[in-house]
Length: 204
Image (tube, rainbow, N blue to C red; front, side, top):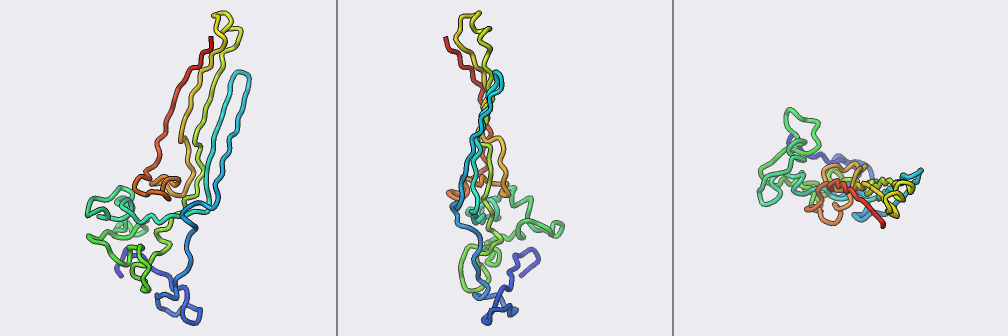
């Protein structure tokens, strides 16, 4: 091992107590299933005078993914460059409280966390496991209906203007990828875009 490498915990031994060795006796269950054990949603609506508000919240809980991929490992994708997520948070002499291990020119077994061999080197560990639980304000619509006394004067049945936003807020411990998409395909799990739509409904 070198400074900046992942360290493994001595959890147990042949007699059920830590024995100072890192081997198969230290294996244990880590994380939740990839697909959430809990999903939920909420759609509150509010009407006040001529204004209307509709919100749609969605979320999930009790789910984890292995974030070991091209966004968190240097030269992961056929030797190509890495993402800022890793570059800005990797271990260096000047950044020893880093989020990720040191950079190496090739995959390094101790830090890979992708195999399930009996030895500690290369073992899957909770280091790369991330909680994908989240709560997102998926859509929000605020509208205003022009008073009837005004529309009657211009011989229109009704007029409503509104603005709708999508993916406005996401509360999650996982910041660099979309926690909702991550469990299906990490390669396209970039943070979702915010969209704003303005509309006008006119009934004659």
